[in-house]
Image (cartoon, rainbow, N blue to C red):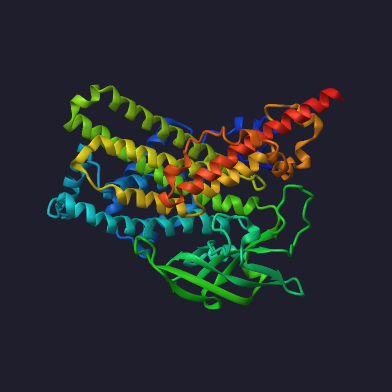
Length: 527
């Protein structure tokens, strides 16, 4: 429908998330354009959604087929349309889960498909045990297909298409298979995702015309790649850096590296037996005009938006999975357990899951509209991290609630959680994202509620650095902390004690922040 060409974009600098904590109303959020002109266009997109949902499991997942059906060219669409397609793929993958039931119209569709193309949809019926164990293969196959598809469209080609380097247009025109090299091992703390902790580094050559990179990247799904989009830290910058007190100590640069210039090793398979690669590079020289995708800068907005688009695609995939699972749960109750629909507990479960699904849908497509509407300069990292974090956490809740409606009919559900767990670890986990958001919020703590802090310009002085000293003054309240243990639901049981300690520290931090606020209010009154 060529939506992208008709969207009226406008300039937007900074982050709406930070503006919220600074107490500044973000009027840009009230001026989004309508992406669809009429209900007819909505129905056309719905038909496209149904086509993807019903045919994704029937097609081959090789490069030739995906290119023929334009799945490798989703980056040419608007971000909102791209999320719509990934949502449909997630709904289709739901059929491979070890529990759930097919809708009547889907059964009718498979019968028509078998008559038209000679596909026997009933000849491979499996019992519950076979279904449970075959789901491991189905989920592994889904990850090996969907994750590279997200990397290709929502991350790599999204970055190349928006790069200021004209050479990247020729790369897009070619048939290049590019991997996103982002993850790496941390020597000290795996939960530290700051740029400073990266081991890979890039430095400018003496003539300022090339980069020299050193380091390694891992957790790349095994494949025959022509290039790697490598993101590294750097202390050298090609542009004058603005004076921003909240900038990082180091910056980042994203470089497109040919596969023959890095050392590729086969990494150990993960818990789903998915093969991964590990790449290393030592003093590899790359010319800027042929490799620089994202310019070196301390302002991480451009990179955050690229990674955030991938996080948004993961969220849309999980949204489609949850919506289809809920739809099948309704069909199961109506067709097999109609009496349970009068049960108040069942109604409460369905109501709760419906609220979470629609809240997630609103978050995803509002953020997608921001990607389509805002020009370069906007930082959408917080919105994307929020969408992915809520998608993962809501997925655990919704799957658990809907799983209880099926009872012992579908006893296998662990692989569903494995799928969510894998997608959670892709592009930073929910725990890392929550800590990053909390760190940003702590910089502007209490500003929105207490405008006295703005008048004192207290926030700009960074009170977070003196929190440790004030924590000692709050020792009398250290035994009054009541833990909700909210985080423990989403991590391995071996990490429960660590989560309890993190929550305990957060509560103590909150006490200290209130103490700081009250202290400076008293000082201002005395003055």
